[in-house]
Length: 381
Image (cartoon, rainbow, N blue to C red; front, side, top):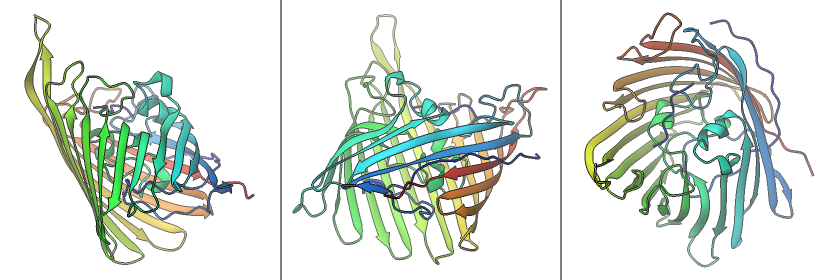
């Protein structure tokens, strides 16, 4: 599992970007903020889009270094500094019946996502899609794609808050390499299956494979997404399985008020190498957490999103230290212009251990304030 161990007057950020929102694959059905951009640039069916995302962050702990000063964060790692989170370009073609999608990006977010894959450090996704005309909506993707787990995604503009949750940073993978298929089973239920190398690896770390099962049940006032991944994920051996259950209940009672509940439970049966060179299973590591998020669209331009979550890491598998974490985030959003979005966000993280860095020594909490600007517009043809 990739561990994210990282990352008050504030200065306003000014960073620009290019691009438009690109529709997600049917295999991914996380709740997102409303799409605010115009349709992507279309050239004979090939769509081009992109974005630039930057922020200024103030950390009240004043950690010794700006780089990775905000611990347990994705992808707003840097404290007390102006930072570029990502610059991204997407090229896609809707399957009819064959299509594709490629997401390329730069910045520290991409360096983190692909930290173990230097040969692919600019590649967020790259897959080919096949959607037969008379197959009842079946779609098959082959290549690299972001995980189906979680209530949030890599791009901040599609989330309700600017900073990613503890669950996004610590409980789930970023991406998979392999094959996935999804298909509507009934009018309101879509099922999917995935066969992938594992978690966050182009080259498998053993000879086993991970299986993913996904389900999305959509009704007028709510959507329930469930994901289950299981497979051997220990290095150099197929002994010891990793299991992850992820569930997201999105509530949409009114056009102005939405909410979601995200729950994750994971466990990994660890394996160790003996003196003879053979492997054997050993201890069990577990992690779990819950996040509650609310979005209130006050006007067409202004929205507010409070988030609360709890994360338990009793063996220190995700954070490197046995601890229980809580965080509260309050995000204010202002739509400056079509395709230009600003956010201001206060966040407080708390641990039952002295975990967060401070110049005078570790402390149990971390408070940050940040201002972000995301631009995602495309040239008109």
